[in-house]
Length: 328
Image (cartoon, rainbow, N blue to C red):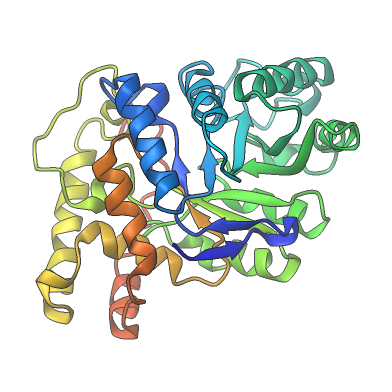
């Protein structure tokens, strides 16, 4: 497993991390024993960065992580996320920062995060979403600075709002953030234009989520496939979204077949190597819910970089589809 530096935090983190949403639930049935085995296997294979959140099973994911880490003598960097007070998601331009992330709420919530993880100080506390409307007076980040000074959190980050990832660039430039969590994949390449260069310029760590486009870029979905109602993917791929996506994935496969030996990679391998090719990327957090996924994702770190011809061809698959909220 190769490591990279997480921006100005100085943390030397594995370039393949552990995305811990599924072990908290929301992606179909998930046995605790499978979650624990997956996490232990990933750690055995060199993973030392884990990303979780309160909303991943109402703290269940954090609790599993805390339990596993207490059973091991491993140096692991754990990032978690605090959501805003319930309301519109994403926040509307009329929401006020002090209403969605009030100080008393942040303090109580972060104490819960610390308790679930079994730590006195959280390595990286990320706000789970944001609004450009708060950039002029980012009071929640001032509260996090206080908590940092009090020794409750080490580093501060934000998980980008899906509809407006560039809204964090101003905060990066002003030095508010140690890390950002960003959607970047073969379909979603907009961060290359400004966000990722800004991260390099201001030495902000970059955590990549949704590298597989919620699984589609592993190539495992089929036309007409359906997901259970309690599975997040039933909403993400609602209506005709999955069929449209699968059709585009097939075009990627066709292009790859012309450029690379079919037995030298899987589509999932290519999806991760494409993301790792950008120098701004510190770590990727693919979801891992079983031993097989731990083995398959971590091995990509030791694979050779993609040829330039493949990188350039994959750029052609940038899909400006907007954000899939409410309907088609």
